[in-house]
Image (tube, rainbow, N blue to C red; front, side, top):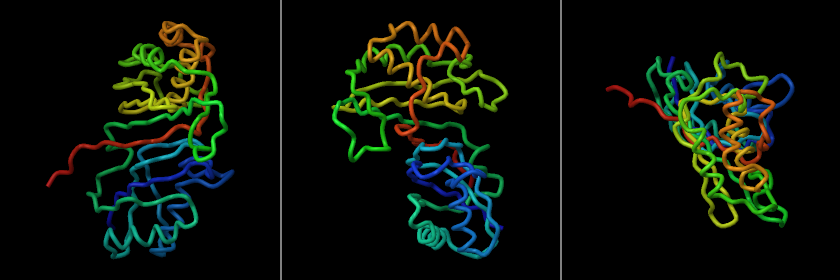
Length: 250
């Protein structure tokens, strides 16, 4: 048995999420079925994150275990062939130790959220960004975001369906910047609660619109109450950017 680490890029639009679902297609199902066609084996994929329906990935890390004697390059090429026409690409494939785990060995995860701040309808970015027509003050959003950095009880920013045992998380980074008509939110942590990133972005957008004062984000956090959440941003603009791991020994 050989464990292969995969780096996946995907458009989350057509899927019910990364994790296999009984009520619709998932990224996990597509990769597992492709691997099954390559190897003739029943293959299970484990991933660093569990992205929701409509959320995209630039470099999601995952792993699969395979009995078939095959090189990483041949496996990557074969998976990409069998994944067509699904919008999923295997960017990299490598052999890793059998105790390496895409989820449990991960020591950091980063996300990016893209807002297109304009009145004209989205064409190229449709389904890939959140369109906000009202002018956004990205500097005010960034100032408000700093109240969320550090270790906090993120109950306010946690989905009612979240299965995490504790609402306590340590946010290593949360920054907001403007690039032309785009407002980019970037965040990093060891792990996140369900809907945490989208909930934080939604509240920061309210600050950017002038509907919330900067300090209300801190007040919403302190409330530790989902009812204090102002807005949950849509999935379209969210991207899983990267997963980080300790260097492999040897």
